[in-house]
Every structure is written in structure tokens, then in C-alpha cells.
Length: 418
Ligand SMILES: [Zn+2]
Image (cartoon, rainbow, N blue to C red):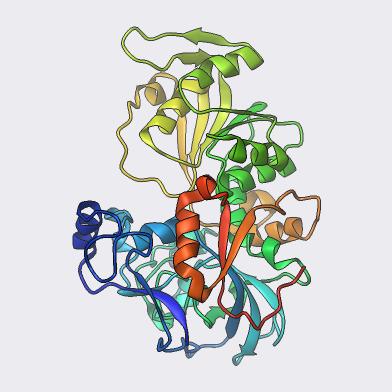
């Protein structure tokens, strides 16, 4: 079959070093520019159904390009997390809306021809193990066996980072029926957002609401979906979106933000001007502290500058939620201690305690089916597999290319819905 894939034949730490050393677009045959480590091939073996009940063969309609995908393409994934992403061959693409092509033995919840969104998390149950403590406690999205292939052969926490089950950037994907959420007639360009919208809702639910004021930093796909999720969960919440450029900020308002601000130290004064609160200026550092600050900050960027800003605008006992992929950053954490802040990580999605155990994606698919959920303009680009280089270029450029969510269409013969 055709697929865009990464063949990792040198150790990851060498690749990471190489990616930082080689200039963009120069050097090896793979190239370290837009294409990174990826190539499109016609001779990729199709993934096979694991020998266990409940597995399904899918053909993707649309598959999104995530920031984590471009990070893999450029060998910039975290060296620490390489423990969990150890597969040598990766067919990327974990944001998938697909059509069921064939159901294997024991499949009861979907039928041939059904359209489904795919939850890419592969827990103990999917790998054929007795549940680990995380899976048993209802948190399969932080399974303790993410590095062990089990009966799936997949050496990765999620689909799309190992070729064993295929990925969304190929013509065929294999998934377990428990990973599938039927989307009915939801338009393809909305349904393909089910995975990033689940990440966003899962992040929103990490904050047990205490107070009325939130800040969301970074209105990219996840940030915009997070604003939309917060607005659904808390119609009266005051949400300030922080991001550069009119393009992102207009979209943040459409998604449900109360206002938008340009990033930088002046955000502190701007929030104080809006809500009151006292601005305190440290003698030796640049960013002022906001006394009577906001209740929660969702940082979808997680650079030193945004983490620093987050800590300066939170009120005592407030919460900083780290969304998307963080990494190694230099930050003065003094305010965490001094103001008794909570720093909350969040990853993947799954059964939600605060939704009575309902999977995040089930909730999100319901929202995506509602035309009033304001996400229609998020998919800005769609390319055939042949256009994968242009797709990665647009995804990497983001707002500079007028791009929010860029998608690939691996099976052009399948008509898009909506
Ligand atoms: Zn587990």
C-alpha cells in the first residue's frame, strides 16, 4: 500500500543531534528540511489484524497532521520519551476519520461501511495483557505498558507512531473496535478533529473549576479546541486567549474566547486593566506579577516565555495546565512554591471521571455533530498523499501559511462527507 513513513535505522539520539546540526533542506538524501525523515512509498506492507477478537480494518478518509508528527519528521521528539516511542518504522497519523472496510472475528460494535473516529490510545486491553494499575484504575491513557508490543506488535502508546497497526498517513489502518467512535454523517472536516478535540477536552477537565477566569496561551488547533471545550463546559467563564497575529486571534474569538491579547510581558498589565488586580514589579526581572490574578492558565505552547508568563498571572493556589507536547525549558519556578500553585500535566484522553466514566471522544463526537460547536474553519488544508511535502510545509508554517489544521487524504476515491 501507499504510505508516508519514517524508517529509523539510526539511534534516535543521533538523529536528534543531526537534526540540530544539519541546516534545513541540506545534507542527506532524506533531507532535514520540510520533508525531514519521511518518505512516500508504494511498497509498504499492509498492517494485518492481530490474532485476537475485535480488530477492524479501516480506510482513512482524512488524517490530520499534529505538531508531534512534524516533531518526529524532524527528529525533534523528546529524548526522554524515546523510551515509549521505540518503533523503528513509523507510519504517522493518529488523527483519523475512517471507513470500516472489514470487521474481523468478534466485532460487534461497528459494521462494514460505518464511518468512525479513531481513539489512538493502545492500552493493556488492546495489547492483550492483564490490565496494569493505570488501566485498572480507569486511566488507560497513561498505561504502564506503553513500550510493550503484546499481541498488537505496536511499540508505541498510540497508533501512528509504529507501522504495526498502520497510521493515518497510509491507505489502511487496523484498530480495535473499542478504539472506534461512529460519527454517522458528521462532515469529514469536523470528524477529523475528534482526536485533537479529545486532547483539548481532557485538558479542560483537568481543572476542577475554582473561580471564573481562565487564560489559554497559544490559539493553534489544540488551543482553539480547548477554548471551544471550555466554553461548552463553562458558558459563563471569562476566557482570555493569548497568541500572536490577527489570524489566530480572530479564530480564538470565534471559538469562544472573551478577548485576545498579544503575547509578552504586557499581558499582565492588560489583564489587570480588564479585571482589576494589582501589578507588582520585581526589582530584578522583566515580567510583572499580577496580584489577584486568574484562576487557571492552559499553556498550549510550553516555551520558557509562556511558562514564565503563566506563573506570573496566576492567583495564589491557581493551576497551570500543560497541554500538548512540553519539553526541556528553563523556567524560574519560584512562584509555584511561593504562591502554592499546582502544575498539572495532561496527555491523551480516555474515560473521564467527571463525565461519569464516559470516554472523552464519545463526548467530543457528540459536540462535533452539533453545527453550533464552532470548529468549521479549523481544517484549512487537505492534500493527497502525493502532496505530503506541501502538507508538512503548511503545517510547519502554521498561521504564516494561513494554516490551522492540515489534513492528508490517503484514499481519494472515498467521498468526503459534508
Ligand atoms: Zn495498562
